[in-house]
Image 1 (tube, protein in one colour):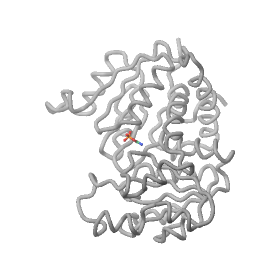
Image 2 (image 1 turned 90 degrees about the vertical axis):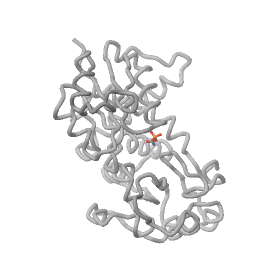
Image 3 (image 1 turned 45 degrees about the vertical axis):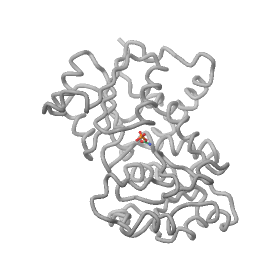
Length: 308
Ligand code: CP
C-alpha cells in the first residue's frame, strides 16, 4: 500500500490501521531525512500549500511549515487576524480566493468543530485539519502514537491514560480513536466536570482517581487546562485542580514504576504538570514536537496531488 484510503485528513475516525501504519513507516523515513545535514527532499516540488490559521498556534503551525519546506513545497501562511476575514469575508470565500491562486492543499486550524470537513466539501483542494475547536487534532494524535510506538516498539496492548481537561480537548478525541485503532487500552481521567458524558460510548475506561490511574498506565498523556474555552467554573480553583489532578514528582515517586509522560503543549507549568516532571527523564514532550515534523511530512506527502 502506498496511498491513504482518504483524500483529506479531517479526522482519525475514517483512517484504517493500515493507513496509520503507512503514515508511521513514511514518518520513520522522513525522520531520518530531517536528521541529515541536508534536511530537504524534492518530494513536493511544485505543490503549493496554504497554512490557514483562524486560531493561535506555535507547534502545529511551525511544524507544518517546516514539514512543507523540507518537502520543497511552496508555502503561504494566512493568519485570520491580519486578513480580510476581519472585514467580514466568509470562510469559503477566503479559501476559494486563496485556491484560485493555484493552491493545491489547505492546512487549516479553526475554532469551530467541523470547520475542516465543511471546507473540504466546498472547495477544490486537499484539506488537512490542524485542529477544529474542541473536536479533533488528527496530526497531534498521529505524532503522539508514533512517539509511543517509537519508545515501546508497539502501541498494541499498552495502557494509555489521557488526563485532565477532556471536555475541551481536540487532542483527547483524536488520541482515543488512534490508540484504539492500534490496539491500546485507553482510559480518561480528570474531575467529573471535565469529562464529557458521551465519552462512555467510545468503549474506554473513565476514572476520577489520578493516583489509581497513574498506577494503571504505561503512558500518561497530560492535557492542558484550557482556561480560554471555560465560560463557567469547572473546578473551584487552579490550586485545587493541581492538588487533586496535577502530576508532580511526589505523585510519580509514590507509584513505584516508570511511566512515560506526554503533553501536547502548551504546558501550564505548576497546574497540570510540575516542571520537575515536565523536564524529567520520564517526559517525551520535546520528542513529540520533533516527531511532529516527520509525521506531518508523511501526511502531506501521502495526501499530495499526483504529479502530472
Ligand atoms: N499541540 C498544539 O496543537 O500546540 P499549538 O496550539 O501550539 O499548535
